[in-house]
Length: 141
Image (cartoon, rainbow, N blue to C red; front, side):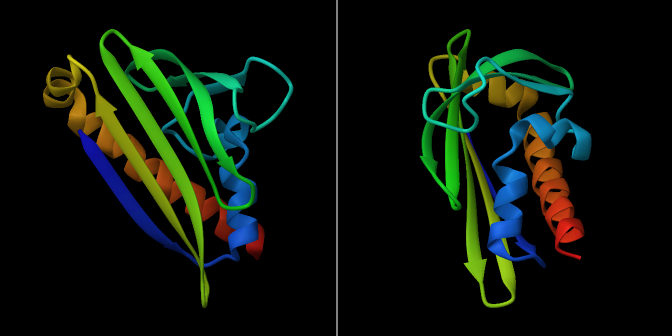
């Protein structure tokens, strides 16, 4: 399963990035996250692992695999035959920025998981995009 969403944000890209690059703060602004706990104090760096709890999903350990400071990061999780990769990208535009989120699930059980929970996962990504964008717009005021 692959799902991507793009949201126009009425905030500068650097302000949007401050929201995106702080996953431990996401539960304070988005109901699509219950808790995001880093395993070390290194911040958003390649190799950092986070324990993430989301509504109706078991807690999952996510490992940061790529970081482009000020622009993007990707993290990955594997649970019971399903590998999930989620990317978060901030793209400057003339009047603000765009937030690009993409989730890709693969593996032997990915199709079954998508058929049972795909709508829930897509709704979480949509809510994440909307609330991160809204938080950035609020910070930019």
